[in-house]
Amino acid sequence: MKILSGIAVRLTFKRGDMIFQDGDKGNGIYIVETGKIKVFKLSLDGREQILHIFGPGHTFGEVPVFQGKSFPASSMTLEPSDIIFLPRDRFVELITTTPALSMNMLADLSRRLRAFTIQIEALSLKEVPARLAAYILTLSKEQKNSTRVRLPISKAQLSNLIGTTPETISRMFKKMGDAGLIQVQTKTIDILDKEGLIELSESGRLQ
Amino acid sequence: MKILSGIAVRLTFKRGDMIFQDGDKGNGIYIVETGKIKVFKLSLDGREQILHIFGPGHTFGEVPVFQGKSFPASSMTLEPSDIIFLPRDRFVELITTTPALSMNMLADLSRRLRAFTIQIEALSLKEVPARLAAYILTLSKEQKNSTRVRLPISKAQLSNLIGTTPETISRMFKKMGDAGLIQVQTKTIDILDKEGLIELSESGRLQ
DNA sequence: TTAATACCTTGATCTGAATCAAGGGTATCA
DNA sequence: TGATACCCTTGATTCAGATCAAGGTATTAA
Image (tube, rainbow over all chains, first blue to last red; front, side, top):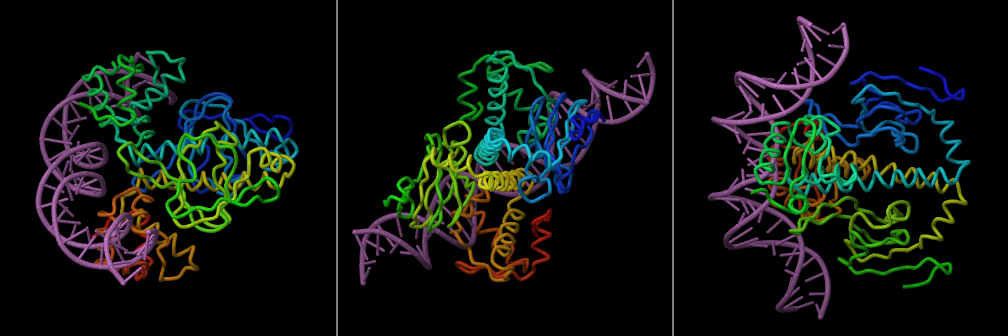
């Protein structure tokens, strides 16, 4: 833990460390310097739904600074990570004295609202194969539209992200392989039929 | 349609009128003056998921002003409504010259992120009876903790809000009645066992 | 006030995906 | 590097809730 500019703090975490918990009071924002974190909800019986995955440059934990004080979800590292913590007062001072910064913040929150809209649509109106196809297409876009995409998280985490179970992920990957859409390796997927994937992600049914 | 302050416009809608559609370009924000509107997503086969219901005083349609240009969802009136439209330029001018207004906007977007977090949790980690119980408890809180709550929307709309079908809503209301938790009338619900409802909303199973 | 439209309910059936079970594979950190 | 915890897969079974079907009841707009 190293003090930056007299106020911000660098926090160093191991893989799997908790950064904050659902319901905790939030007194500042977090910025990923290195590593990767997830923001997620847990059910009483231990099932998990991932809301966001953030990497270097992303800020998170703002909601309680602007509204309602407590965190609406928990957050944990997915890899060893360095996280900058900026206390509430200093952050609010920056925001209120820098109009451009506040517009950036409004844009960032809007981006997340848009992402949540898509996630709610997927959970409510689409089935697992469509959600999985959409995720693969998103990865492809993020990775220069490559036809070989790298899975940035384990398949178990992926199941928590798209709202299903590891067993179902495994079966759907198999079906999508049988259908000639993709070819799955341990940490990589080859896209064989992008059009087919797009159709599946929009409405399609498998087989 | 009446011009306000030379720039804002009052729009008058009948029940069931479309205000904007998913994918349209957004060039300003909307404020509900009177009436009630829903913001929702449609699937290709016509199923609907409601994201928000807004009444007098609420603003909506901000996301494309701050990020990405197009609306992430559609919006329609649920009753005859008057809506104020404030063009993008005028709104951005107000926001950038009034720090308090921009903080209010950040708080409003944060409130919606919190609400979406709860909605994703509900869709992914809870079953229909728990979602329905949570909705009844929310209504009760909004209505002075009364044990007789008024349903502000039809049961068909309610099914689109909590992510199920009218048939299932009907059956679950019946089961919750049989279990002695509530008594359902056409437009009103009496809460008979608030503790039981809370337990059901958190984790419980019906029967 | 009366069509017309939307809304609500109940029953029968179907199905996507969860759960339960179990064996083998793969990383990681002490 | 060896142990341990996690990860992945496949099969059998179960289940919550969707869909299909059909009749009755409210609202609303003309």
